[in-house]
Image (cartoon, rainbow, N blue to C red; front, side, top):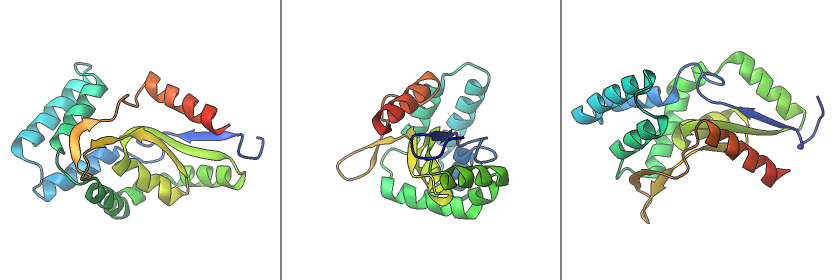
Length: 173
């Protein structure tokens, strides 16, 4: 294809760049380190099942998960995201996707990860692969950098994910 930055390459995260779900790695960490309280554990399992069987919208699932992390430091969550990438997620990045991303970078294309995941899951993968742009969901934080328990609207998912990519393209030529 054509070379240069006017060609965009957009990659989903979970199931495309990475085998499995990065949020599941984070949840396992919370369980193993005993950070997840009983209500969080049962609520997350229940919500995941309801979502899987079409009884809960993704937006509600994400908002519920964000609520469990209310009060946490965003900076500390991002540090954790980097550690989880190194410890577990790096080995899940598909080799073919590493080659495809490298080919787009070599061609000078504009690359972005476009995901419904949160920044703590998306940014470490993008950074490691050399993808400079990230379009994903973000936590709302207070003045002290702590999560409020809500997700910045609009939720990046489905049609809104496509709209976010279109807005990125319009803003970046």
